Length: 358
Image: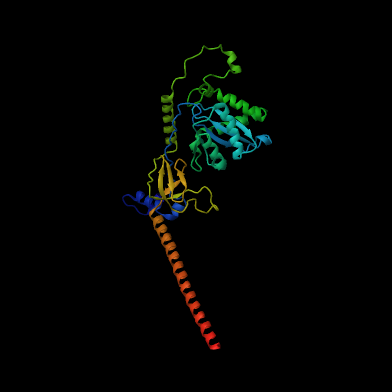
């Protein structure tokens, strides 16, 4: 559009003026011609100091190639050691997940807290009461933001790739799960540079490959690795922010915004919601909106600031609704007065007719 205008006319600052015009055009915003906002910078989660402090729980499935009683996998992923637990099941009701977590907590103890998404199993009253009875704090992610539980979500990708390779090698589904767990638990993680079994149990697993190496003497205690891990997390953050061209959000409490809708009625429908007001900021990139929805800006293209034309349109809509409500109340009041008048006339008529008759 800039080039087309420059072919016909030019003035100082023409590109900036055209961009501002497009950004304030309601039709351009609704049709996404004004461009999408950049995603917010990545916020690395602090590395926990001890194992099994806050594991992440997720449901993986449906697995079509699995037996009928193993269609779903319940994943428990420890954020400190990267130790995974996988339990196959055919039911994913809250009671079934509670039973699986009970068996897992019997082996490793009760964690201080767990992190899950907003699945109906994890938001049910039964699951909430179970965690409360065991003194476990529940952290839930914002809607449609799997980055909040990135550890378990990344492990889900490992599950897909590993099971696919094992099945291609003509292994059974159970053998594929066992191969995955044995390999992942005994492989140094890219973040901690330690094996999950070393951080979780304080020792390494003895595998067939260990027969090629003479037994080593017992080493010292595991060193504190917080500083090097923070440095590696910072490098990962810089890489991700540079790759996605992240930009810190400029939203403020009280602003009116539109929220990107993930489901549309049809292809030509707008993907932006009606205007919503920001009521509260939750953390670095979370916001509480007027309709009760919580939005997280780590999800790309989540919110757009309302343009001037949007604000004028929204004010006219609110005024129209208010006028319509006032008119409705006025008509109702007139109707009540008309009914009272008719009632009085009817009473006087019946009274006079009765007197004349007598």
